Length: 194
Length: 241
Image 1: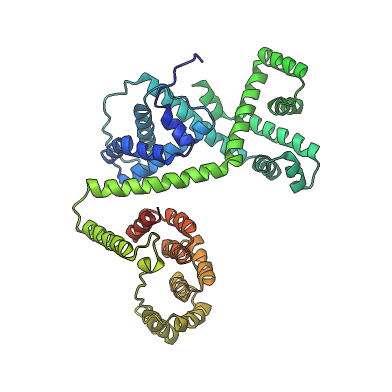
Image 2: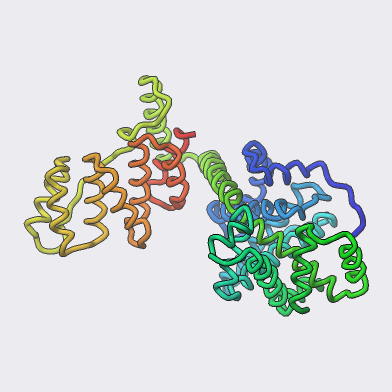
């Protein structure tokens, strides 16, 4: 990937990652009203808008925490597009009846489009990882959980009453198994290829 | 991909691989795209799991903060945009009165009494009159909670309805038997009756009564927006801030 300049709006992303209330307030003040307006004029209401906004912000928090979020476009366009697409998906999911969607002219922010695709891929991957994790055996799930929750692998070994060598080995094999489950999954292949 | 590879991945990511092996491993990645892809996925998963399990508390803290801010913002915008509904004035007036009380009392923390509005109950309206039900109803409505509690206990032996449980909990709370009250509310909270949200509200009030403001706030934030007493929830949340 070519090195791209990070947009000055990256402060919003950093603020979310740091759980900075001031930044979150600013996002609600500056960018959320537009989203609310859009959702309200497209078969939604304020409550639905509130849910969509929260979901998107949690997603951004996770992506920022995973250090995979470098904003290359204004936050405004990016955030609005994400919320809008989430809402349209929501409408599609829950309604077979024709819904009126007042779509404005297609987005002209190319950088924003690209960012949105990245974030949506991140979202899909996270969901896939979680779903595949559930497919692991109980022992593997427990061991993986503990090895990240507890501060050291020695403590994991102690807790499970096995040797340090065993938990170390088992942990990599369990994550390995998860890696294979994911690579074999068709959804993963399609995310990778788009 | 075999087991050896995954063990190698882990060793590499933990920074435990000797330098010579490290170079050889990186060279191998360049030459075997399949291995490189598996390694990329492994690495990403490792990070994902670390965030998910190792930093679960950070996400929880963020969600809580976000929910609070969101609630505040949407409450504000609701009254700004929709406006002019008579009940908004009522809400504003009651908030103003509450604020007034606080200012007059020179108190900075909200107190249980201001939010404690006991309802009048009518158990015997539906169904045939049961002696204990009638007695419990009268005692409860007369705020004689000490008298109502044993009556509720008797009723609960045969009728474990959410309604009776809830008002039994309220009586305990009024009688300062917090632990017992909270046990009752917690049971309702984990259930799915129409008293679920009322129970959470009462739990929050119990925390408020004990001046455990943090727990109070946490509970309030779990009450959904469509709860009928949401105005009180919002008012109390604002006070707690």
